[in-house]
Length: 206
Ligand code: MG
Image (cartoon, rainbow, N blue to C red; front, side, top):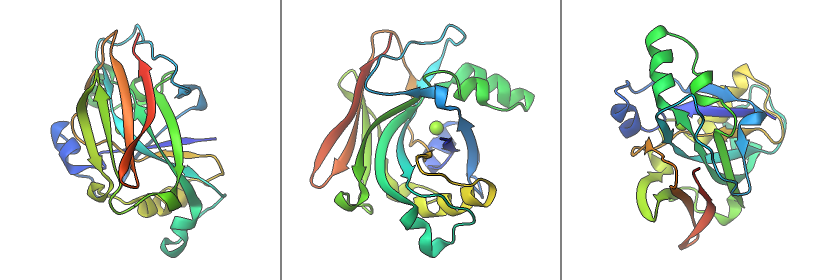
């Protein structure tokens, strides 16, 4: 399986990073060894002094596809989940300055937290929103309608370059409010399901 990630997909997050709003999706990938599941603790890696949380909506691809056309994009996913794109912000800054790829900063072991998934049919996709609580306080809140590139647009775009396969994940970008995590932090993510919020993951930083 592949893990696609989209950068700068919310205007306010691009702004807080001092980046321009992209005219096409910013794409990078993580290997399967980046997965962190089942609420296992996240251990801050020794190579970074500044690991940030980025809460993101995750789309799970449900069938193989290449050159997916807009009218069919929505049939390529049935489940939506929530996770974190952990980012070593200090390394990412160095990579950006040198014009290097982001993998060391973004694709390291356990940098891709994946929580619970829900059936798309049980969700209000237009009003869908999500949030991250750090130590019980909301630090990031996102609304799917604020995505610069919609889920369908991302599926079409990615499938021009890569064959989408069942089980692939797309991290769809983070809203504003990213910040550093520290040892002892507790992180819990919530997704709006019907008229309430469901906890999708809840783990500790060590
Ligand atoms: Mg991200």
